[in-house]
Every structure is written in structure tokens, then in C-alpha cells.
Length: 594
Image 1 (spheres, helix red, strand yellow):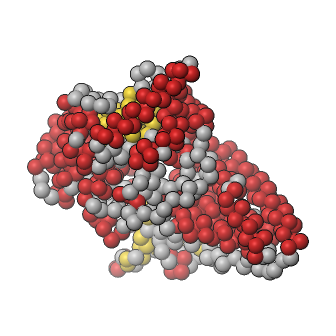
Image 2 (tube, one colour):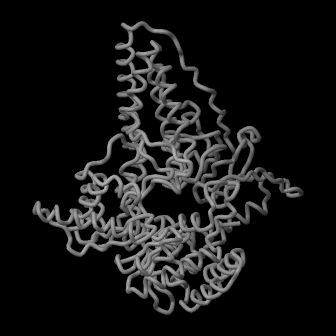
Image 3 (cartoon, helix red, strand yellow):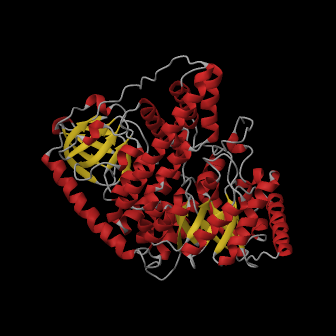
């Protein structure tokens, strides 16, 4: 928090969750008190009746969520409505529900208490995971648990505070669930801010879909702001500005005009190729996690999918997906995007992405442990089911495949041997598959860079995962706030590792993509282009900005930047040089950020 001093403004700093600016009176929602869950003893004869009450509550909750999904689908589209599929899965969770019934039966306690206790254990478990995506699933369980407990108590599932809003306002709450966010009246809610939350939560995702400015992670804003206070919400920089001056309102008004003009420019570029001013083309692809994101890929102007994270088919469920289930998912994605390529990454479980139905030993350092290709090579039936599904789907003609976390030729050779085994099995069965499936390797570990020349002789392409490459090269966990400053994408070592990888690939006659967060940063995209990357794969929402800056760039400018970076000894200097060039080329892209 900072005070504007003589300007009389009070600025609360949070996390930008949804772009945009709005201003108006604030409506503060009181922090909900802890739900009083009744606890009482029951007899053994009453257990069955309690389980029936739970089943009735689950049916009611399922109906409410399906109704909500239909409303969101009608308002903003299926991909965003599919957020509620994760909540519906909670209601089908045999492990969670089995634990609830067992607890009620063994401890002879009422079903509300058993459900609340088990749900809280799940919430706490997800809340401690390092992965942003998985950590936010705690919010889904909390949301569903609240509905189930309301239905067990015979209460209305609708929140009276939100229903009573009848004047345009900025909503300020301790937290908002996806269910609450989805039904916000956009005529009355100008934008919203919360004490808790992150940019990756389902609440934030819905805010972006609703085109509502949003800021999360404000800390204790609800205790410091009163209903009726006038404020400006800055969803670009993650700020809630109380008592904005006329000058501030004017400046943000100009910002909104510039952003509207920029969005119109980005929209005009959507179907144009990513080509520099001097005619150098680079492929821009999208990173996706599910079939539902196909529309976002198309709307972003992507030339295909550069990274399909298949592990999300395995998470939030209690058995492995079958070969048939995987085949259907891969084929549908390929058919919807045909003829654009779809690059499927084989299973990247481990680290902080573990299966709920496997009782796996705790590892002291899971990021250096049993994960990704290491799991697949040891769990051969699991790996073969996925490889067979990919091979079968490859008949569509636009599927490519890559292995994650390859550390050397032994792993790559072993993976390719299993792939060939699957090919032979399918041929013997008379099952068709593409004879020319392109297979690549992800470069995420320094040892893979050092042996890139040997790896390049065994694959058709490389994809550099900058997130892990930075983490493993600098020994810096980017999820650890104490050392987050060490996670530097422009560290000289990282720049040189990327250049070494690209040179080894090109010498072997194969192409190189980059699919980490660096590829989605317009400034860093210039550096990657200068280093020789052939493809960038980014989050769909970031792709228009990356394409915009590429189309305003000349290749010699990018190569000059790369040459400077390869000689420079300071990560800070490289970053400053990179941003300075980006701002000169496309200043309008950076006008909204502080």
C-alpha cells in the first residue's frame, strides 16, 4: 500500500487479474464468517439415512451447477462455461465421497460434519501445491463444498448480497467464488477486487471472459475501505486507487482510449502472418490444456497448437484415462484445428502435478525426482496407452508429438524404442497411423543443451521449455518468493543455453520452438527471434501482442539485440536493452503498464 501524499490518493497494490479500468463507488462485501457446521452423534441405524441426505444434496448441487454452466455458456461461451466441469467432477469424486461416508459410519457423526471435515482436508492439500493451476483448484472444492453444505442445511444457494446490488459499483470482497463471479450483473458491477486470489484462479479467468476489470490479492483491502468510497480500479497494473484526483481520472481516461485503439489494431492483425517488416516469418502457436480451448486458439490467430499439455487429462480424476479416451481427445483437437499442426506433449506428471489416485512416496525434491519421461519409461503400460492413442489420432494428418524433460540420448532412445513397439503392435492389429509422425524433444535441462547435437540426430524438432530451463540452470524455484528475483529469463547463461540449442538444431537440419513464458513476453520474443527461434508457442491471450511487435520489427534489430545479449555479462542490462528496443518499436503495447 502507498499513499499519494499531496494528491490525497491512497493506492492499494494487488495482482492484475483482468485488464481494464473503471471508476465509481465501492461496495464492500463483508467477509463471510466461518460456516457453523452442525455436529452431533448418530446411531448406526441412522447412517444409511445420512448417506441418503448427502446423495440428495449432491443431486441438488449438480443441478445448480449445470444450470449455472448453461447460463454462462449462453452469456460468454462454452470454453468459459467449462470451468464448472471441474466443480462437477468434485461431485463425482469416489475417493472424497467414499471418505465422507466412511467417516460418518466409523465415527457415527452426522453427514454435514463428515463432509466438511473431508472437504477441508482436500482444500488444505491443494492449497499447499506449488503449481498455480492446481493450487487454485482448492477454490473449486471450497465453492462446491459450500453449496453442498447449503443444500444439506436446506438453505438457498444464492448469496443475498450480490442479488441486492442495484447501483453501478466496484465490488470489493474478501474473495469471490467462480459461482458468484459467473452471475455478476455486468450492468451493475463495473469491476471487482478481492483480498485473496491470483491471476490464474477460475474467478480471474471468468473476469477476463466477462471483460470485467479485476484485481486480486489486495491483502486486507476490505478492512481498510468502506462502502461508498470512490475509487478507480486499474486491472492493468493491479491497483485500487481510492479518492482519485481529476488528473488521475484524466490520465486513465486517455489510457482507456489508447487501449481501445490498440485492441482494434490487434484485432486487425489476427489473421495476418507473423512476418517482420523485412519479410522474415516465424510461426506463432498456442499453448493449451484442454479440448475446450480450441475456440481460443482460433480467435487468437494462432497457426496451431505448439504445446498440448496432456497431463490435464489425467489430473482431477481417479483412474488413468483409457487409450480410447485419450484417442478421442487428441483426434477431436486435431480435427477441429486441421490443417494447422497440433503438438502433443507426452505425460508431464510429477514435480507438483501428481495423481490423486496414486499413493506415491513423498520426495524431498520432487522437481529433481520422479517426473515426466522418467515416470513414463518406468510405467510402460501407462506410456504405451498414450503413445498408441497419439499414433492412432495421427491419421488426421496434423499431429506432432514431443517428449518432456529429456536429459540425454539414453532416455530419448528408450522413448523412441517404445514408440516403435507401439507402431508394430498397431500394424499387427491392422490399425492405421501416420507413417510420418514428427517426433520432437523438449529442451528443459542443461544436460540436454550440452548433448543437443546428439539429440538433434534422433528427432525432427526441439521445443525449448524456458520455465524449467531457467529453473534448472539457475537452481532457482520460481514459485519460491524468497528467490523469485533469481528466476531471470535474460540471465547470460540462459541466453547462451538457448543459442547453443538453436545452433545444434539448425546444424542438424531441424527446427526449434520455444514454449515457455518467455515466448509470451513481447519484448523477450524479440530476443528469441534474434537468437534464431523458428516458432513461439504462447498462451492464446498473449499471442496478439507478440504478433503485433513481430510485424513492426526488422530482423537485423532482433539479431543485433541477440548479439549484445550473448556478449553481455548482466541479466539486468540485457533485460533493459530488450525492453528499450520493444518500447521503441511498439510503445503502445506498454502504455498501460507502470
